[in-house]
Image (cartoon, rainbow, N blue to C red; front, side):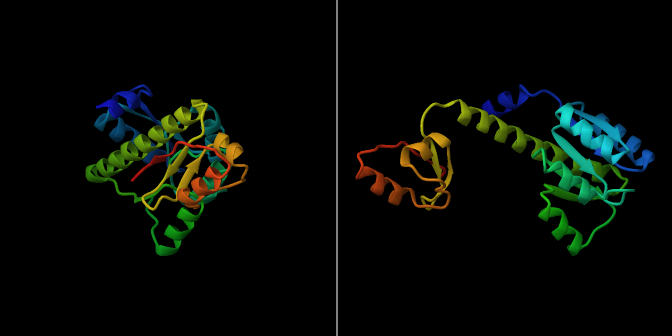
Amino acid sequence: MIIEEVLGVYGKIKVLHLDDDELQLDILKINLEQMNHDIIVDSEIDGLKALEKIKTNGYDCILLDYLMPIYDGIEIADRIRKFSNVPIILYTVQGSEDLAERLFSVGITDYLRKEINVSNYSVLENKIIDITNKYRIEKIFNEVIKSIDDSIIIVDGKYEIIYHNDIFIDLVEKVDLIGKSIIEVIEKESKNKRYHRYYSTK
């Protein structure tokens, strides 16, 4: 319930759908917005205009077709990743193992084959909600972490460091400790009489 209340602060889910087929744009917008009134779909047919919109409109999720003129969906995704980590779903009739490898290599979040039926839109709706919630939780986490004026370390079940803030790095006078054992770090630093607080995800 607490997570739901926090996510609610963000309001409706803003989705940008990029496709060179205007009929597909209209059909998807109508279906998604009718199925879920908390989803707002902005449609775009031009890849370059879509990139400019993403930079200024604060979308929660991007839907990309694959086969488009000038730049395909993967090329657009690659350009998006140069300035944003917004979730991207490749939504297209195309599908192959080679395509799957390419899309994940450029940072596309998920993939769904395009079908014009209610069940397909329902699957897409759930993907958008799940991906957006994870994205929003990550943003909240990052904002909280940045606001804390203390050294922070997060470790996994093996006590290996998976996150540390810059304050901790300054304290131990090292560049990067990701993947290192927190136990070894503490043992070394205890010799210098330094004490640190850490949090485990275990």
